[in-house]
Image (cartoon, rainbow, N blue to C red; front, side):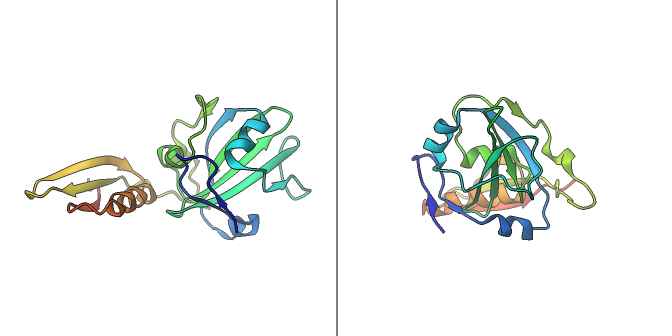
Length: 177
């Protein structure tokens, strides 16, 4: 597997095979779409991982990228060649903030799903429980760093803060009530 580290703000993304994505029983959340020419997208992410085949169900010719971030977020990119836009889907999280934390796409999205949790179904349940990231300072004061996070996004941010090796303590709390 190859690492995708094509620009500095990008978290480490590892290429994964499409078969690994198909093994997940998690939901797919269509997060958003960006209008970008393919060469610009390939400057950011490298050459696409595969081309459309007879097993794909797209409205026209497409190319694909599939990654797993260092925190476990699985991202799927579909570039629609005839329309010149990329559709970004997450396999195991519904948080658009989490996706945007990892993929720093240029410009504003052409379309951004206002509430990806609405894509929940019996086949693809989404845990809508909000989580918060907290820290305790040197004097024992407790502060909420960020709230209304998905569990995976909260764990991602916790990992990043802990890697800074500050003396402070960090933890995740599930919102109750």
